[in-house]
Length: 133
Image 1 (spheres, one colour):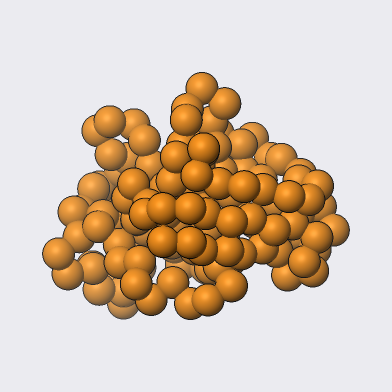
Image 2 (cartoon, rainbow, N blue to C red):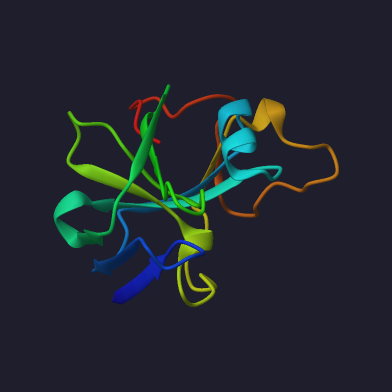
């Protein structure tokens, strides 16, 4: 599987090679504020599978470094320097991420009551036990 994406203005681009390790949704306060929505939809890939180009800004959060385009402000990635994984914000893909189905949900205690849980997805009241998103 080859995927590509980038920010709104096109200054930051990325390519992903291979399947994600996992796909999830997070309802925590940080993800809600960072995404500007009721939740964040993301996929985790090995860092070695991602090719990034363009200048990035960084904001440190509980999950590591949130990377964004300093020109248009699009939030794109997150990674922790000690990890060999990168979290990709799936809304930044060039094509709709229809084939990438969430296998789990995080921070379900903060899920909006009008939003149904994802059928078949693991439900975690807070973070996953292995501490990786």
